[in-house]
Length: 397
Image (cartoon, rainbow, N blue to C red):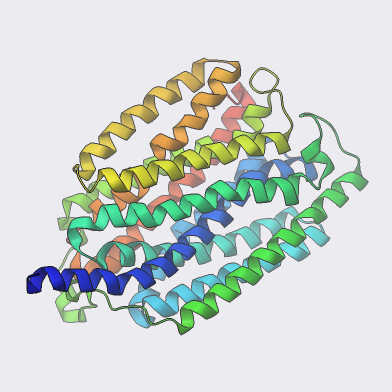
């Protein structure tokens, strides 16, 4: 074996423990993000919200990405990737614990603050962990590597509906009743308490993960991505990188599509002319939506070892467009299953766009990552979808 090949093999071996640990990180933030998909129909019945007010909850979540992404990049540059990851996990745990008083009161406003804190912690994790995974190994396999680790993010998003469906919707009157039922004040107060246990469990796991990562020796990033001096940075410009310039709006537009599909999925398939099922039953189909995304990412990781990442991305984008057209104009099971298939075709979009966009940024990787994560704020436009659902119906939204 040549020295070059041996060196690459040793490097890959050295990165595996770190990537395995980071995969649990991706799992957790995917898990927590998609708990929102079961939380939204629950809060809609507890606080008697219309669709616009319901989607405001999700909008606040994604506004956090816009507000916190650039400060996160600055923090990473100051204290490093590892400490930033630990701090992000602890912020998420604090936000999860804030859901306890939010449920006890109960208070719609405190729920919004708690979710904003959780999302800010996730933003810090995303700004740190996505570029770390992309650049810590060989550059030629960066898209494949990030798709693989993001597949564990999708494992979290796949399991979250089952967790939320059982512990939130399954333990509440609103979650186990037919769509459209009106709850009494006592029933709504009792339903509000069902979020306490799951968020305490989530907070405990996040603190444990923070302790493990704090004690784990993460390998250093490549020399090309080491933090440069202020003088060196003055001669560099993010906007001279064409991939990043197009990558930021691509992420923004993609998030509008992804969140638009998952956000009101449970409400959509529960409708009499679509699935005619309860919210708890609909959460099982949400499991299939996110499960399709997980399968797509594992498949995408394999395909990108043989096929150019941009070509795979284009193919999946066409597939997503076709099934969305079917979901918009069809009815009954056809519309429901078409919407479920969107998850598969959406799967590779975020990690592939991300790795293509930060390729070659070198010492500007933190700032580039911050801009890309800030573009996730596109998901905040889901409030427009809520207004459309109120005015024209869920299917057209």
